[in-house]
Length: 114
Image (cartoon, rainbow, N blue to C red; front, side, top):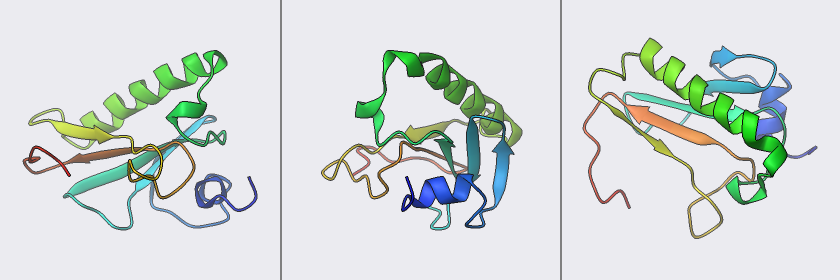
């Protein structure tokens, strides 16, 4: 996806503060952090949203969850908890059409969120 900003970040065309990377996923700090710890986790494969996942993506989804756990622990979020947000579609607040997970922590999270 030539115009996708997250694809460009994954390809190294746009700089980001990376905190985890492997062959299939990338985690990087959010440039508009909403909590003391706020990072994004994306698949390197372009997937427009959670609604575009297929059965073939099952192992990728499991891997994304494993990476969230690993990076959350590395950032001390396992002590007091954290929030995972996946915005989907316009009304869901998705502004970048590439599946991504917001991981937020380091403070108490209010409810309801929006």
